[in-house]
Image (cartoon, rainbow, N blue to C red):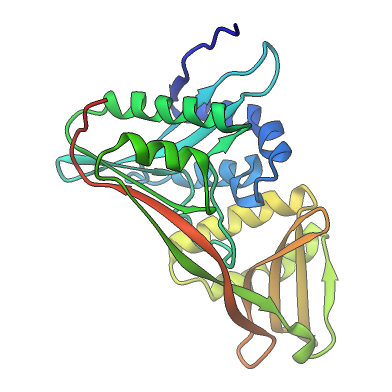
Length: 274
């Protein structure tokens, strides 16, 4: 019989960053999307660290074999709201997020690990002072950890909605230059940032785009008229997979379409018995 060690709860920016990096082999092995991987979550943590009300990061970790990656991990944000605390997935409220598919994950190698991870999340919730609410969004259909949590929280609600994603049709706007060169990102970044809705979105877009570009995981596509950007698009790359993320096309070149369902788990603000 294999002895299982209870899930660990880790708090604090630097310690959570270490756990995010340690879980990268697990995230890769289970096919987690770029938005649930170490470079993206590092950008979320770095961006949030400069904002007073961004929430406290926490990690729930189910360890694997000594020296190896964890069997499961959840990266969360705890944010005070009034007298209570809202517990969310790290990065679920980061903007802009790419659409069309589930952007977040509760990382688990198998169903047994997912059950242990759910227990660890409940252990974390038990340490929260005052009432708490759980709001996990952007998950894929059938997520085993979300199901395990819903089974243990009496009035938790699982719901789903269709997502909407960008479609790359820049060829309609003219000849397109596509590259993963970080210098191309820097050239067109001011134009791409100008379309972001607010200062917070611009700060996150800048940080996340540079981290992705540094690792060769970002394509910059541009349709230009001399030195002027007519249309542009940032696309996240994961092997052969392409995920349109953020773009500007005042006249044509980008459109949206319905994508995959995304799941949310919500539990109202109160304490529940274990």
